[in-house]
Length: 319
Image (tube, rainbow, N blue to C red; front, side, top):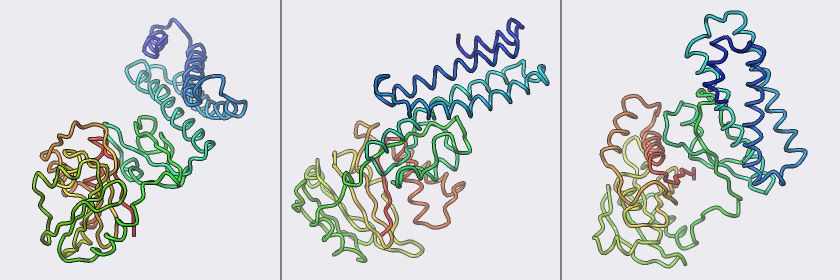
């Protein structure tokens, strides 16, 4: 029986509140069990400890459910509407957070020690925007569902081991140290072995590339500096930077300014074509309604939102 059908049974008087609560408990137990088995890669991999942990999460949900049942019994008329369905769906949505929780626990058991929260296409609360797109020690970011949006959260976790970090070859790092603090932009392209493909100077705002130069970037790393300007240490990626990365299939694009190193290392949701109009729309929205108090944070917040739309793996790392 679906949650909608169960709600209708209660509204129609075919079942009592007590029977409804029992059915809801059965539903939650089934959903959480499925989530745990998925996270473990099969029932045969679930340990007694895993079942105990699942039980502790279910116990909390059962307590919430018991309180909800008391609310319904105390004032049935207030709940015999679509309001009942909405509240019941929150219990169903909690299984999504449980799945992410189980996967996080399993990742830590397998030696993963860093985590990042990714935004998926959805409306996001301020908590989720703050927690997204930066790597932290595993277990330190808020769990899915522990934000203003509660169980409506659609964020996802990704995990990695410290040794799996994408790090710049010594040649890239040395080049970045050499251009750090310059008043004009200088860019260089490096192949997978850290060999320089070409280097090019620009002006205080950009480096321009010919189509032939851009073609040499495919599968390679592009790094460059963003010179400081009044009120800003340089800032994050421009639309042109991101367009270059997606359109020419770079393996990584990097930028440095006075305070941060910026990285984009992966893309999932684009065939190479991205929207400048969307970038401009996000920019205007952040200027009018965003929470940034500096130009650097403004540019970062814009790229965080834009990266979310196209599945870009984006980081800002303090120097």
